[in-house]
Every structure is written in C-alpha cells, then in structure tokens.
Image (cartoon, rainbow, N blue to C red):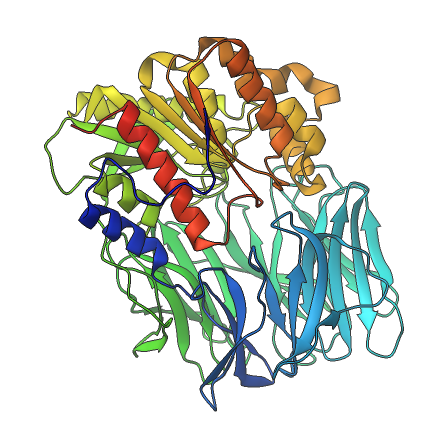
Length: 604
C-alpha cells in the first residue's frame, strides 16, 4: 500500500490533545547556535525553521535586527560568513539532493550571485573563507578537488585533487596555508592531514598516524602569524587533542584526565581552548589554558551541548537541551542569548541509562517510558543513524511522539556508535550491519528479561543507517519483531553503492574493506535484500525522491522484492532528499509511522 504524501498530520488512533502535543514539539521553532564574523562579531548568521522550513538568517547584534537570507521550497542547510561580516555564503542544492554551488549575498540583503567564478556544481567538501582567499571543496564521481578562489583573480585555481575523498580542514588566519583532510591511503574513515600553500598548492607539511588512526583538523589558531593547528587524534583509543605547530613541524599532545571523548575549538585570542567532553550520552565543557596547562570546568546543566563557541570577549555560548527540556541558545553564566519567535516546545520524557552485556562488551542503552500504562509495554526500538553517531540525553521530538502514543522507547548505542572510544566505533569494520544487529538483539533480550517490553509487541524502527539496521534486523531476526518502520534506508547495498554520492562510496570501502567488485560477498552478506525471504513482520518504508545518501532505486528494488513475495508492506514517498527540512513534511512522516505502528502493534 502506498501512502498519500498529503496525508493529514493527525493520527487517527490518538486523541486530539495527544496529537496536538506531539506535533507541537516539531512545530515549535528552533534555531542553531549563531556563527559570527571574526572581524565583525556583531554580525551573525544562524539557521531557523520559524517559517516552517529551515533557512539561513542574518542577525545584527548591535541593532538587534534579524533578516531571512534564504527562502526555498525545500529549505537551506548550510551557510557561512566572510571574516569581515560583509557577505553571507549559502549552499544552493536542488530539492535536498545536496548537489549544488555556493552563492553569496550582502549581509544587509541584495541579489545572490555565484560565490566563485568557474566553479561547477558538485557535492560540498568543505569551505573556508578569508578576506582575499576562499578555499572551496567539491566532490564528484571523479573524486575531490580543493579550489582556491582569489578576490583579485577571475576564476578559482585547483590546489589539490585526488580520486579518494578529501575535505577542507581550515584556512590560516593570514591566509597563507590551508589544511586538507585526505584519504589517499584508502581509508576515508581515518583521514590524514596535509598542509598546502595557498599561493601555489605546494606541499608544506604532512601528518598521518598510520592504519586505523584518524587525524582531523579543528582549525588554525585565530591569530595572524600563528601557525598552530588544533588536531583531533585517536592514538590512545579515543578522540583527544593535540596542537601541531605547522611552521616548526612540532606537536604537543594535550593529555586530560577525562574518561570520554574530547573535541575542542579556540578562544579568540589563541591562548586557550574550549574543550567538549562527551561521556555516557552527556556533555561537559572545560576551558584549557595553554600557557599554564590548567583545566577549568564550565558550569552547564545536565544534558547535551550540541555546539559551543567562545565569543571574542571570552563569553561561551552553547546550544543545549536534555531529554526533558527543549533546545535553547544560552551563555554560560548568563541567560538566553537568542530565542526563536513562536511557541516553546512542550517538555518531553526523561531517559534512563541501561548497561547491557553484549557480544562485544557492555552496551549503553537509553530507555524512555510512556506517560501511561504499565510494563510490559509495547516497545519501539528507535535506532540511530550514522553509524558514527549516538543517542543521547538530548531533546528528541520523535522519541517523545512514540512515548505519547503509548510506547516505551529503547535507544541502542551499538558498536559503531561514537562516544565510547575508537575500538567500539570501529568494531563493525568488515561486518557492518550484522554487528550492530547483534547488539540490538542483546538489548532486546534485556528488555524482555527485565519486564520492560512485551515480547509480542516490539517494533524496530530508525532512519538512514537506523533504517538500514531496521530492514536488516527484520530479515536476520524475524522472530524478535512485530513490525518495522524503515525511513530513508539502505535496502539493497550493491545498488546503493552504485548510486550514492562518491564520499559515501569511499566511506563504504573503508567500512567493508573494499569495493563491491573486490568483495561482493561481504556486501551481499550485509545487505537487507539478501534476507527478504525471511521477513515476517509488516514493514513501512519511507523514501526521498532526491536522496543522494540512500538513493531511491535501491529502495525500490527492495520494495519490488517484497511485492513479488506478497509480503505485507506500506510505502511513503516524499519529494525531498535524505529527510526533509520542511517541518510539516516531517510531521506527516512521523504521523504515517505512528499510524502504521498503532494499527499493527497497538500499545494496549
């Protein structure tokens, strides 16, 4: 059965109050942490969905004026400011397909124009804007190019190109050098670093830690003449920090006695680092002073800081939420910095931490209980995408919608998830999909034995990689699941590899250990379509017409296989990419999923 894309948002199995409440969590407008121009910090941009679609906005802090920069039917997800704050760059794709070009318009408004002459449309591979020089990364089926566009020249020059994936890692403050993250060694999941001269692309320095040890750029020091680059490394089994003095070719590791994964950014004067510490699905922030090697914890509420940055005056601003409290933009030690115009989202439901013994070690899971009913519950295993991502103690409107409908919700931070060290993240290499499903099965066993979940009423659901794991789990563990909802999934891995964007092909080669022409049997072993005969549960599949990550054709192959077997399934297709930036479309998708679940697996 194919679902009408114009289906009403209300779920027929829920009362009007419940429908209004879960939808309000999506409709409440959200904003991102503002970015500011380094030389004009009162000039900022942010993303907001206050019109119902995610778009770029300009904010003049001195005048406290706001202006909508972009206005497109399917929204806009990427924007950047020039250092002087005079211009706003934004990436123009077509209906969510992620293929496009950078456009620029004046900060105060005006006509858009191509940001760099002669740069053909492509997938974005990073951007770093200077006063005189801009470095633009672009990816196509032929590989990656890093281009240098100069204000005094007519067209962009090629600084770097290679068949393997690469991206822009940042431009030095004096604009003489650029950092490149690359995978010329053949492993896009563990990149190396290269420093090039912007004048002619000549090689100045390189750093690679070897097989299975990634390096990534966190940006040059924001001071003219300072050649230090902040780098993320994983030499001791987790992301940590070091400073690479590129001119001297020396490095200093920053060793901190903190148990989780670390990331960082510079304070504006280059003397301190803002350090993010992610541990057991929650975030802490610290200030690390380079001269004294001292570490000071910054007070943040329990929950998750999705992004943080230090203003030129040293004030730290954060985007924060918890499983109960909706997102807010606030200053540490102060109040709300910026609030979206409109109603505030209702509070949601707390999560409980659970640790489960699994085949590869202890698995961290999060559980949210519905506001009514008693255990054992009908339970939705809501599986995150990525796979290099995680579920956290942050505000999730989708989690709350399932709980409002009467389901317990279980999140599984399976092997492959970030936040638990490099070994955990890389444990699925060579056996993707099946490894994660083993961990989901272990948590499912716990949910049954603990009395949380009703064994006859367990739903497997997720989007992107979570949608892939949903289809794979329905085929490899058919006895566990009463229904499945797979949103924008990988369904036929061989066809997906042929059609997906090149950057994801490179990721897949690193994940599987080669291309399908080299190890076809490994791809088939991890492909949901290989197990379609074993699927027992009814399935709902959602697909985006312009999706470059989980393309439509390979989903249609899986649906055709279900249809040939007369299998009970429903389909929802929408005219966007890998999800939607239009809030009402997102609500329709959640409504369709909830309606399917309530009809197939009533909560009680």
